[in-house]
Amino acid sequence: MLYFRHTRNAPHMSARLSGSMLHIRDLAKRFGGNRAVDGVSFDVPKGAIAGLIGPNGAGKTTLFNCVAGLYRPDAGTIALDGNRIDGKRPSLVHAAGLARTFQIPRPFPAMSVLENVLVGVPGQSGERFWANWFAPSRVAADEAKARETARSWIDFVGLGALENAPARVLSGGQRKLLELARAMVADPRLVLLDEPAAGVNPALLEKIIDRIAEINRRGTSFLIVEHNMDMVMRLCHPIAVMAQGKLIAFGDAESVRRNPTVVEAYLGSAVA
Image (cartoon, rainbow, N blue to C red; front, side, top):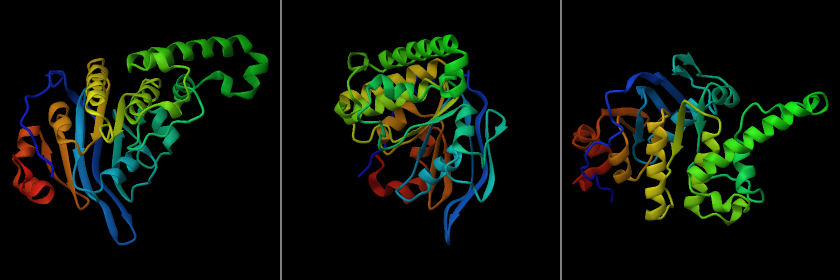
């Protein structure tokens, strides 16, 4: 059973939140006769750490996939920092300033931690075949800058001592931190985090929460799908609640916690 524990708003929930970083209106996605996302509308303010919760099968992952470009919505609009991204390919959504992690981390197991993070660095000139022949100094400079950026994020998430280790040796929590570092090397405006607490021991979870909060203080917005209610209540504002493909509640932790529709649809008698 899941419990909402009453917590104070986190320090990052301040008056600096203004405007919309992610704007979702009347979003719909069907699979045959199943309406996985059914007319959902909400906004993630700039500078927010927003939460997206709901029971299994509520449509949260489908919504994430629509936002990230993996699915083309059947209806509705999605805008990132004022620019439409609905229906665009994942590479174009990423280039627009959105990064995404997954519930089950997907590192390249034989590659080092550093190499895995370097994969996330966008627009390297060495990726263009001709540049290696006609602009080798530029390629070298770009590679040096990419390594510097990657190492800074690896250190930031606390994996500096494992920089040259293969990703396969990392624990589940360390792999979550690796994914966070790989997302951040692209300098995104918004990061979608898919269950960052899943399978993570309490000590590493505290580190993940601390690193998310610090990144947010530096100006990056977040939308987090999560089943760990303590984490959501501590970290997220606003919180969107989905059930059966629909948005059933949206607001701060206290209003969501006491919303009778949420109690019935998601938590039953488990709210304390």
